[in-house]
Length: 270
Image (cartoon, rainbow, N blue to C red; front, side, top):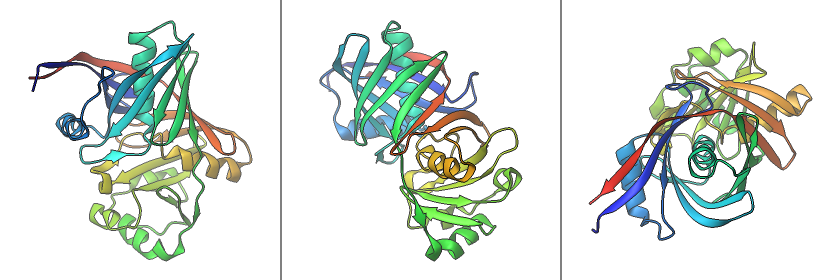
């Protein structure tokens, strides 16, 4: 292999302070990109819930255009919120601080991220859910508590009664991994926020994800309908924790949050 140097960043997403929120690695590639097996090896080496790979596609005025792919330590995924936020943060603070927005070409279509004061706002596809009654017994066994409601969309969605129930969960990861779903979101009404959540995805090599933007593609439409309003505040109550703002737009959702750069360097592939 020829000597390759890749600009590398690690960003804590959905937080205003280092060592909270959800860390994501961001690799800034050249137009030639990297082979998919190598990207997967890099993601496994980073051992974060997601590593994002950015491929420049030119720009138009103040809008940057990049290809974006996301890898967990074990697989490529179709959609990732926190690594998208981290990627936009790198581009809008380190690459082109004068730019107003970024448009990413992804496996989930075109995703746009714009500035909102110090926050960044992501425009994502909403994910509808449908009742999932056949999995109620299995989900209850995995969580140790019976959900009051259970749905499935791109992932499972279990609704509990209180934020204390969500925060105190000690789920059986083997039983969650056995579910016919690419992860399980658990949510409940909040006290300081409109709702809280946690996300478990051992199927993707992520026992618990600290803060999960993609899960809010299900959560925001659900809570908007339940609470009767489109603008919502949310907290993911993992050990690291993170804050999000959400807005229901029908077929799309907006997810807003802060991000903090904590590591900047160079990956060497010799």
